Length: 477
Ligand code: SF4
Image: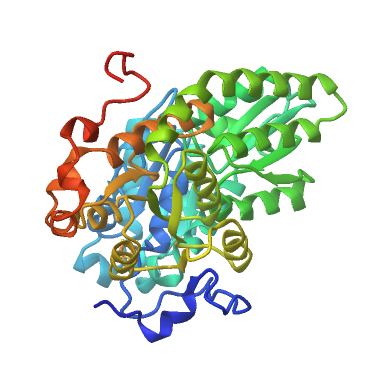
């Protein structure tokens, strides 16, 4: 029997339980003792800035902070890969007593000479906040000496939630904006904000926009290069995908450079198409952009639709639990699951806001559990209660799913297959199908007991075997 901690009861909503007027309690610090799935402020900054691949990322703190976030995202780069290293000043007891500024200065000098980065980010961790090192002064000195931007990231782990880390990362990026030339930027140009090119998504999206005749100045931060970020203020529109991490930067750019921003999601057929059409509408002075968008959507959907239908037939009626970092991602996932015949029984996020949860409640089916800033025990409780067939989450949710004998789909940092765009939707359906229909789940003790006398164990093995319906021959069918 797993109980919800009384202080957290307002952060769990059951759609249609008669108290729809009660707004979700969210956007607050985690409850003590809850063992939140959230990461610290430093980790929040690190995941946002990590994909900037030609910059040096130096973690000023104990080596554990650096190890914890080493290669945290699988972000692909079309050039340099300095970001794949994890550099730390390895602060110890003596540095805590006498200060770590000298060590930081020496580390920056040595690393810049060895790796020749185009900029350096210096992350402050908890202990740096406690001992009060003047990281800004060190950065200023080294920047003047080496002639590259050396940017302090105010990400002391204890000073808030992961969301505060996103904010610190946005403020660090903002120091680069406006320092490069905008020459060659066309009137129909955009920046993609909040895609991290985990498995090549940025390249897929970039290709769509370029086929529509729109120039992509930069993506912040997927496959980003310092020179491109410096000229991002020349774009005419910002498209924000990961709203939790990038809305702050979009607002700063709107205020300082007058660049409007729109939210966009590149996951699922509906949201991907809406993102392209919305952008085309923004550039309505050139009607050929909309025409090209329509042709692109028709062509790409036509390529994948028959295969999606085949997966839908097999997955019809299966249930899923979703737990992700930002809530915007959850909207797209609910819609994408519906497209392949699946129902969302549990949905939650680490950093959603009140409006996000209201919108989630609107699109979910009655009975869906909606949860903010959950913990492993609660998630396990919901998975068991709803008896879901699939859990979609990140690295911290994977063991919960596997321990309970539930299929898992990684929708976070570690995945190797792109899930964005039309190709991504097909990859998603394929992955969900192979995981949910795997015969391995019948051997999980919980499921075996549950289905001991049910049709599950008497179903012919052939039917349970995950033969991909899209690659099956007619004879196999
Ligand atoms: S910054 Fe603080 S909370 Fe974050 S990993 Fe380091 S010690 Fe832990």
